[in-house]
Image 1: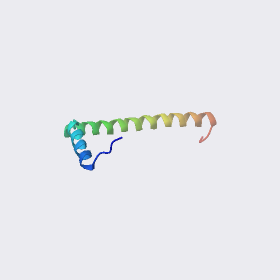
Image 2: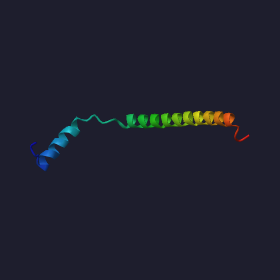
Image 3: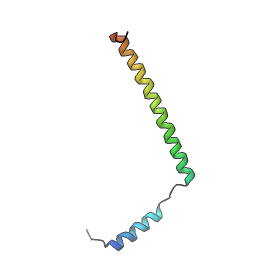
Image 4: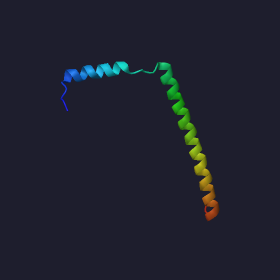
Length: 65
């Protein structure tokens, strides 16, 4: 494998970075909001499932009367 000089490496990095399509501020904001919404929905779903399973186990074992 041929070694690349640091200057050539930086030129290649700049060339590759210029090819990247960066998201706009609006796209980033919408994506971030969607992540927060999905995390909240997932947390609520798992809270509900956990409560149902907990209730079922307490019912079966007769704990917490």
